[in-house]
Image (cartoon, rainbow, N blue to C red; front, side):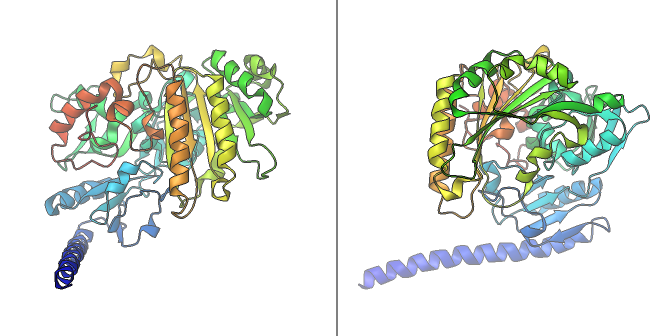
Length: 490
């Protein structure tokens, strides 16, 4: 008995030491950060509660000791220099939508640098360029572009950070005409891991060569904090600020034909489509099968372009002409922050109807759990006409010539009791898609990835060069929470 008492006391002492060490570290960090506040601009602030800058997903989310709410680009540089000097880890946040489990490695020992206040959007007089702050949301960019009679390549969710989406690639309705969001970057203002603030462009000077410009466009969060950017804008007439889009609803018996038709149709530059499986809200009714179609043009042009889809016979058609600020409105209900929202994604070269029928059946079973009702299955397809005309080696984004479709199990639930069931379902869907992807290697668009993927799955052939550049520009791993490059080298 004495032996076991000693063991228990030893274990208790071990945990008390860990707790005490953590507490001392937190107190020290709090003192340090109080000193930091005196160096920041007047409108900056430091919050001690994560509720002051909530994450979209709570699953494996970062758990900082404080939120640094910067109010000027200079604040970002000061904060990074300060944290480096005190060995305080940091993660840069704009829209707080990143759901990768790798972000959860910031755990009670570091800070979040919140860029939300850096949300200015300014167009040049010709409306051909737009300067935006690092905290700009997609909706803020779109509304400003609309007010300036211009189009800017944007994602399909209003509440995500514009530059957060861009740095991983940036897909959207207009990419068939204008390429990925990252293809439209003209310059980036970046604070490097060293604490140095630079402006980098395609014609970068000798000190910051084209390799860093390449790496920032596709793997940017690993190389610095992007505080602002200049991107291309496309002035248009009022007609071009509208598009034909909306949902077509299909029956379960039509799913195989729909998937085959989606696989066979060639999306022209003005076309895009997105398939959704969603709960009907009634356990006795099969999940909804909704195909959202998009055509940047008139209704007649859109229906002609999607004639093969219409030939299947949708049971409901709610398409219409919609103005630019409302293109993403259907996704606004998913913008509520909080709850568990991990994503299991897979890139596909083609679609196999049987695999999607299996996933649909599994989804029906999954929805028998009350906790699963807000989870959806997504399949996005955009015209690759523009992005495939650009060399794979032009940016760190690796899948221009391979991925045609992005599949995603977007899971939503509350609490922890459903974790195992939800994750098992997400993994099942991803496995099914990978087996029928038509690709030689597993490939996942990094903005849709869960966080457990091998680095080659998300970085493809860009991995080795990225790792070499990481050793040059961030040798101490300061920016190491977004699919960190010092992980596996498979």
